[in-house]
Image (cartoon, rainbow over all chains, first blue to last red; front, top):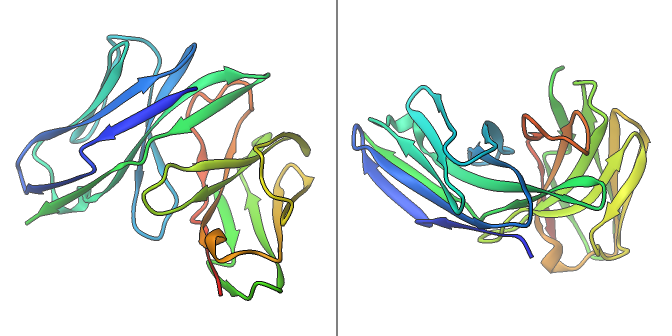
Length: 112
Length: 115
């Protein structure tokens, strides 16, 4: 069974204090790993897709990396507006469609 | 309107009521999904539709009944729910069910409370 584990569950940072969020996964036949951002009262918003070990993608203060067992979301010099829950998900093939398994998320709070 | 729109945003219903959730996507996508999000739990896939055809029913109780009249609209009909069904119900779409390159596009969800 595909599994996704995110850590830490919650993270509190001072503005400008860089850190990383972890996503560990076990999946049969990884087709892609997604990162999403979710603000309170809203649906998840797509950030990145990573396909193979060694791949990296960046967007503003966020950088996502992928190895064969885990992915990291690095946040450089965060701002209060980066506060949100960050979700990781893995995609695998299942019966003709791409099954996506989500983690429980890391709730990030950035304090001014 | 653009993206994925869900209505209503909030819904309170008694256990004997019947209600429906609506989802509409304006992206020209071929696949639509219903997910359930409960506190401290990962998103749970409920139903998958591809071009109006249901391709997955993820062991969801029959008190949840999906309907997809066309590739732009998705409904979730609710009846005789239980308090544990209270959650955020999210609709999502993607270009195709076989390849999800840019992830899903989610709606803002319906916050359902069963009393």
